[in-house]
Image (cartoon, rainbow, N blue to C red; front, top):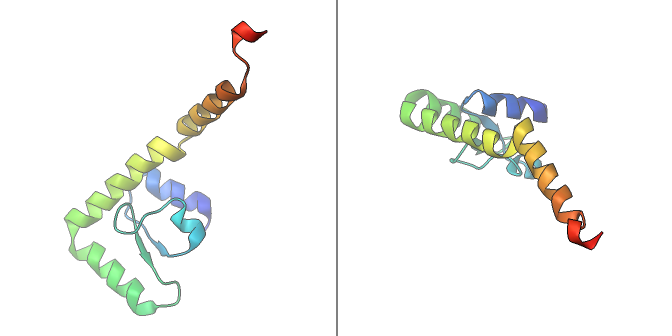
Length: 97
């Protein structure tokens, strides 16, 4: 899965089932904004998909949290805001010039 796909799914508030890998855990949190499963365990994938299919409340909850997290941390606006904050922190204050 392309890392960009994760952000697309998050932006649309879609429930995500993904492999539980360290790089994925930088963005997704199991049972908070996604369902993370062992990459090689077919049974876990089936159970995760069935749970989402059968539990609308859980499905909607993790989809909404994924969208909320995307907007707060990973959208272009959020990233630009963080970059500007870092630049401001590293620039000398106007009084020291």
